Length: 86
Length: 461
View 1 (tube, rainbow over the protein chains, first blue to last red):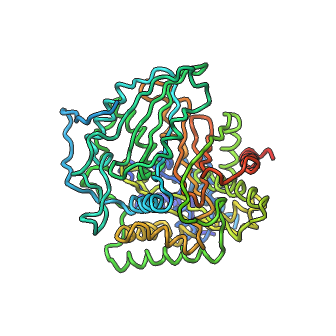
View 2 (cartoon, helix red, strand yellow):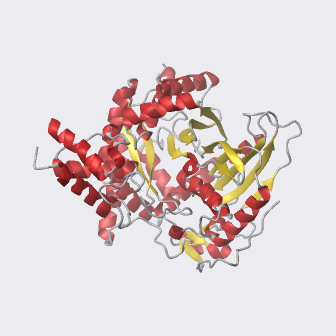
View 3 (cartoon, chains in turn purple, blue):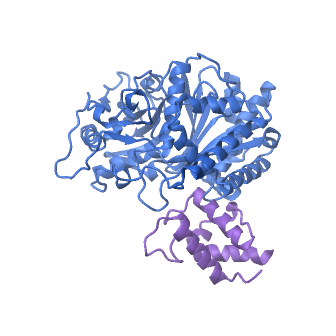
């Protein structure tokens, strides 16, 4: 691991969601709720595949709880934990 | 009583041209309608049923339905090819102001007892209707007496051009309109809005995507599947029956928890697909006719994530899930395979390739799609149809003044594969509609099917 700090992961996740996956307004921040912003079954898998492409780590969707999907920051914490377990 | 259309004058409505393009998904579903008419002497109808408590305001509903049809002519427009050739489109200039119809039926003299459904709903699902009408054919309201009085409401769609999610959005949209919370025409459905998800500008790139989709379809034939009905035969008269497996709030809490922990909080449908596969496997295994693989098309809703979603045009693609039948012996094993197959399909951009392929198929004869799939799969379309719509009608709890007690989909399924399952969460309860061609399963097999389904969902085998 890991040049991938929690902050860099949160930034990556936020960028992927904002630029590629969701149609969100300017007030979408790394602390915005992802499900409320429109993250759904397809988008979450696309997101995890993008994260895998960048970090080499696959986090199975079944490990993503509502708490992990609270925001880009909380999801980054979940991914960071997996990176640490490699 | 039939409605006549009249627009609300205070609200500016868009200027509709004489025609509107179909989405590729519209065209795909139309192909099934054409195929069903040619082979099965039936229409490709689908129903959305709402079971309401007392207080349904039929007059307000009738008025708003007419206004909505007036503002959104796509709802009552037939689909035709221009001068019999060219790409099919909605012909708004021929849209029929008399449709959709609304009928408030008299209460049955003895009062239908809950949970029985009006027999009329089954009749409506198997009607043969002219394709001159628009997408929403009719709405039937039947008062219910007995211990749980209220009204049963069936929306019957022609062609099912509104997909499951779209037909639920339509119901939510009507209620939002009633409350004054939605414009007469949803922004994403205005004539100037792009009907499709974005595809590459270069035709060669779109063509390559469509070819990848086609090769994927042809590859499914390497491991043949078998539906409960068996390969399609010519001239089998379609006759659908269905029943709804309802789960209590306590059972549903357990099921939803199992689905989330095993398949994912946002991807629980894979758990439901696995349970549905194993229910079919239980019957086929008892028959001694287990195929090499199970093949299930998984609809993918392509409406904008977080943006304004459209209502009136189908925006779906599909992921074709194929798993070896031997892996269905164990739920956890099957689920892992399904996850891997879906993940690989998304990685290979099967969803986007499907959009490109469906856009191309619009320009081909409508029957070609179904024929191509059947040829690739040795006469089968798939093992069964599957749908999951999550929170029913967006979590709607009241509809035109009445409590929403229950609701479900009854989609069309052709004589082959002959069976389909739709999962919906209605409030705190899970409903699973099992729709099938009459005679495809025996009573014993039906019991075996239901037991297997319930056992996997609840974990109480």
